[in-house]
Amino acid sequence: MRRAESRTPVISVERLVVTVVTDNYYDSVRVNPPSGKRWKSSPGISVHAEHGLSYHIETVVNGKSYFMMFDYGLDPVGVLNNIKLIGIDLGMVNAFGLSHGHFDHWSGLMDILERVVPGTPLYVGEETFAHRYSLRPGSNELTDLGRLEREAIKKQGIAKIVEVREPVEIIPGCYMTGNIGRITEYEKGSPSLLIKRGEKIEQDKFPGEQAIACHVKDKGLVVISGCAHAGIINTVRHAQKITGIGKVHVVIGGFHLVNAPQEIIEKTVDDMQAIAPDHIIPAHCTGFEAILTFAKKMPHQFILNTAGTQYMFGV
Image (tube, rainbow, N blue to C red; front, side):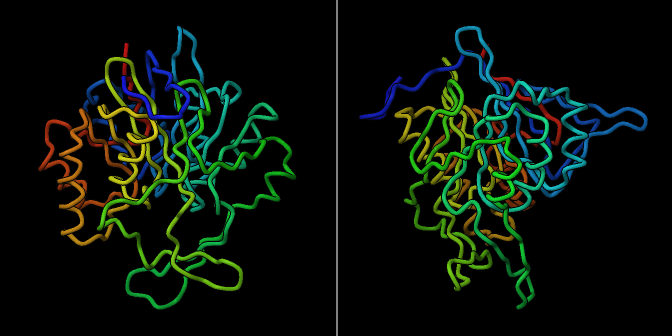
């Protein structure tokens, strides 16, 4: 495989298991996807779906398993319910990562950290702990999105906060991207998403948003996004750049195309077709119209995601 210049050689994993702990959509009777299985409900027992996203990730390197979580959903009760039903052992998690500072990705974090080994690292990007706001469609009044409190995590005394700006390996074979470069002309972010910097409230362009990249042996890159406020094409191309690997096996996650103009959706899908992943798995904030467009234009690669689905890539 090709490697990025001046970077530590990327470790290829023998197997990558991505479990979607929670997502916006759940369908108990939908058939299993390629290379995966969906959690099935039974009388009185079901996984929880919500406007949030959370992953549990396992890499297998030289026959040994390593575990991490990436994002933590909106409702701690629902997320912990899913963790229990799916059978995730939080005590075995080696590292935690957070894509960005929106509450639908961090609200379950503090409750999860109460159940992990003290000293486990929590990797975050810059401005993760900033106060954020939004302008809802049709409204001129700010909606307060709150903030994840660095002070509360430190007071809890369990996780060790590690802020990253450059790519870093957080478990063997699994890399946080560092700050994502912006190269497309159309992925400009949303003017309705705001951040407080000093005394000013201004557009949030998410300079520190993070994604995850893994290379599965003989398959290619798997790129895992939280919301892709930086743009999902920018995110994938950045992952290709930092790893030096062109072949993309899977792109999964929130693509933040909800309420986007159809023209932007079409450009995004066209560029994703050019990247040519083997599987495309839009989730969370991708939006119905964009999901439908991916399904129509990439029918052989498209997988409809559901909460509780586990994907297995590699041997």
